[in-house]
Amino acid sequence: MPVAGRLPGYHRAARINLYPVADPQSRQARDLASGPVRAAVAQHTPAGTTAHVGGTPAIIADISTAVDHDLRIVFPVAVALVALILLLLLRSLLAPVILMLSVGLGFAATLGVDPTGSRPTEAAGTTSVTSR
Image 1 (tube, rainbow, N blue to C red):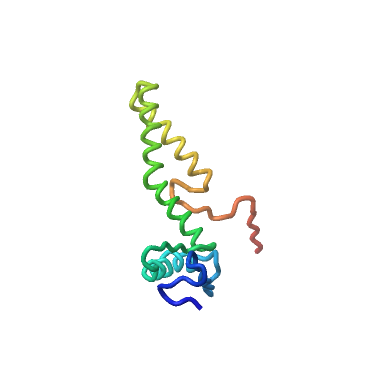
Image 2: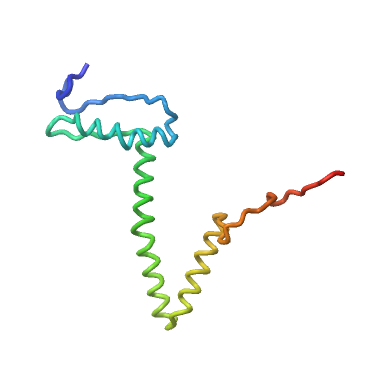
């Protein structure tokens, strides 16, 4: 059994398996892997070594972090560049705004977002029959 601060055998690598009770693809497992487990690993890593947390929850947490970064940084920069290019090509202030709004609303509609915020009373394709 490895002793804290020492690596077993060939002194090059160690592996510690942790099996959480939460479903590996659940939010709870992802929060556990990206929070307390990584903090504990970082705190107990021997000097001069590196430690990594792996597995499905850690991978999903890393992907989520990357996507959040892209949505906060890359997406607004891309929108600004496209708007600038449209502004230069169309030589108008209103046309690029209308084009960007129409593309944004079309994308939102593709995802199922209703810009008015109203909710349908019946599911699409269903009929309601009332008997007396």
